[in-house]
Length: 237
Image (cartoon, rainbow, N blue to C red; front, side, top):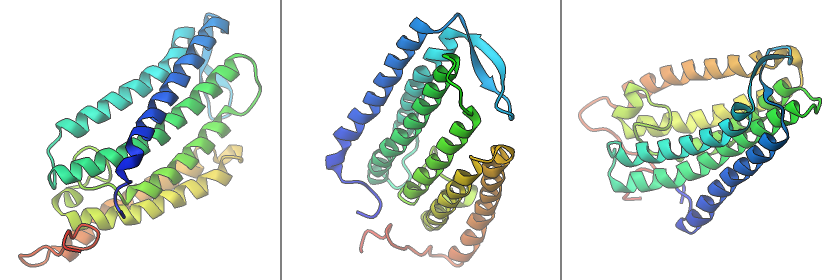
């Protein structure tokens, strides 16, 4: 119960994922029908448009990306080596559904913001993107500690991949730090001068710290011939 959602939620999460993608497609069709041939697709740090593209790119890019992300992750999770066996793979597939839901909601927000800007609705796009990204980090942080050891998702350093204990410790701490990054990013989203640095600097700092932390944990928990096992990965508990 500590590391995987209840199986009863699995069908509803899949339906939610495809509902989000369906909404993206509907929004894209509407945008393609009402937008001009050329639309803004990129904004500078000052919030001003500095790149344009075709309305195909400005409308259908996001649902195509969402579908591609969903298919790619599912293929990688199914085809990758099973560290810990089928139980780990099943648990990770359940967690990845939830994480995908958050990522696709983020993509939907960015799509709506892009189309709204192209329609002339005035607002700070960078603020919306950074605010949505900060909330996404908080969301990811809440589920990071539930990801079991694998090759495709999570904090994959040589030491976390080598030890389930190191993986567990690193991801538990990483979850808290990801939430902290999001909490820092939320107020910074409303300060134009901190739109980028308010979340980029914490992300880089957390990434470096977790890389070092995983090495320290590996040295601490793999002294001797036997690797210690701790909850929730100890099946005997």
